[in-house]
Image 1 (tube, rainbow, N blue to C red):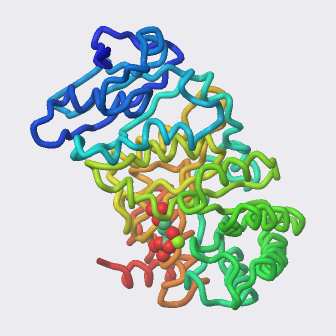
Image 2: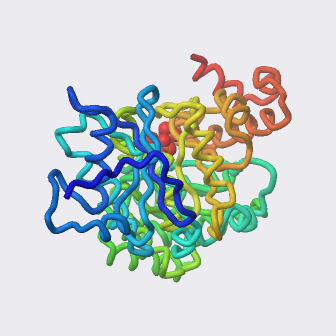
Length: 410
Ligand code: CAP
Ligand code: MG
């Protein structure tokens, strides 16, 4: 018996999971037919009628297409919650973001957004700290938390990395992180780096009277990630970093559910392989929702003004989602990073506000007078931006900022 998944009069139930797709059918196929193939393949059906699928099962379990717009190419599909295993991001994605991307009948397909019922969201632990919890650790309120990434990405020894972190902490930066590809390398062993950095971080805290945080990149096979996280905790660290795309959702969720009491800094390296193409893949908003379910505390989401792609509308929609109430889950602190230097700060703060972490890698370690001057210039630019003083004016009696502005003038 042939059943239709198209049901424009269907009113989604409170506990349905609702998925919005952008759909481009292959040549000759109508949008409705393409939507039917997506709804079947992502829920209970396949490419042909099934003698094994009875009406009762279909009515109980099938996905329902309740919205189709030829103008926007958007399709909305409601899925009964019973199709999804609680707390399982892998099974969710294998359903609504699985085979359907491969079907010849679909030329392009983008998963634009997922709306989850609270009962599904609340099965996850979610973020451990929330924005308030992170700000409380730093003792920094109503302004951005300033961060840096040690550069070169890799290449320094653990001792050199620690000394550089100390210099940048000493000159006003609040949080410093490993780069995304620095984990445990012969010339910069993870355990040595943790010990060396934490020793000098404490020195910087004593000398500045300010709380400092270092995000150690624990990325790797899950067993090693757990060992590394335990080591950071044992040595008195407060924050670990995970490359969420290369590690995967299950590793991230399992790490979070160990309740180490460590801030989990989420790096998204590799996301653009499937989020950048506006016609095919997933949106970064969907990645952000999954990361919040899995339990990330702070997440790279884009800068609008820096070196990575991401429009104002997109970055704002992601940042606003991360900060808003979402069932019982805590909010996530957005991180703006990538190609930033002091001259870009006023515009960045103007667009993204002040409730975020702002990271500078080359924008500090590429400063013509060195990393310490780079850190000072960033702090000067932040101070001026928050007071809405034009940077050129402020730079007149702040030479580190002045040289940064002229060095990166274009
Ligand atoms: C920035 C960075 C970050 C990017 C990631 C880099 O360094 O360390 O990984 O910000 O991009 O390696 O490029 P710079 P996103 O400050 O020197 O550019 O935050 O968009 O995920
Ligand atoms: Mg990096």
